[in-house]
Image 1 (cartoon, one colour):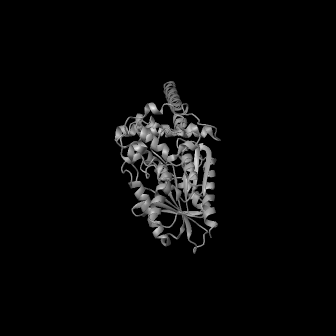
Image 2 (image 1 turned 90 degrees about the vertical axis):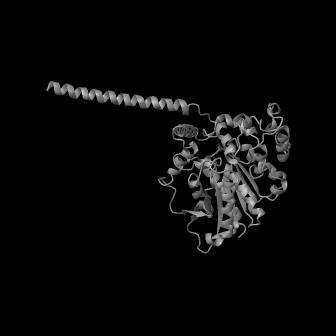
Image 3 (image 1 turned 60 degrees about the horizontal axis):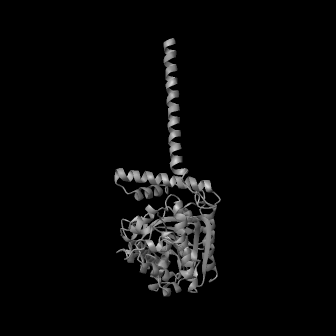
Length: 425
């Protein structure tokens, strides 16, 4: 009996030691993660939920490093792993907001995958407005799934059909393929409006970040083709130029590494992947890819002198400029790559435009400069709103990572659409 008791006691002691070792291991791992990812996160400015922001940013930093580690041992690119992780949540996502107000399905249009959202309780005889949406993600990340909740709410709040476009991502393809995919879908939808039960006179284009720039470019393509006039474009913290990475908002917010994703090593890939170039980190972020003539050309196009002088208060700029342009710099000035820099005549005929800017964003200057260019050219029906939140917030509309500012943007965007559909009926 004593021997059996001793054996049982020994087993219990071993279990206790194993459990304590396990707890210690978990504690050490958590401590390392917190020290490595959570502690370094810097809040870029006042916001309602700074703790939530820090946790999300730390999470992205962790997932990014895991993806890059898997990339190193499997050869699967880290951005493919990231997209796979994000997209895998779509079939299993809990949708507490879905009470049947909107139905949606996936299909192909011109060999491009789209997700179509249709509001219910709309007269079956009515042709609906349509919002064609282009997701952000630097042209190599994101999908119709990453922006699903946002598009659901846009359809619900506007009473419009939303068609989200899953254009091909870089670096598997390069410019102009993503633009071509998007134009093909928009053109087909407009030409076959009866098939989609939409009103061809109430077409809106919308996009966030890189998708915002794409919305501008797609509208210009349709305008040149003399398709039905696009009633409005909605640009949510848009990426509108790839020439100058030392604008004021870059200099202010790049050190914060917003969401652990807006950082130099990733942003340089945005440009290189999209237009198939080999700019170095040092060249882009010190403007060493630009000559003095390039630099003057950039500022002459945006007529920066009428803006606050602090935009151009970069005392080191002339020391960093190159004597001659990088061989690929001319690609960056292409109006379809940097739509901010298009000629005045192109911008002057822009449709009604809703520009959303985020205060804590390296792309804030893009939005401000585009708004000011449209104002200079006396373009009517231009609305500019700035929200004290970070870049990419439109992908954070699901519990428990939702931010109120994202719904503010959705509501204001929906109102922009509603105002331009009800007033003309």
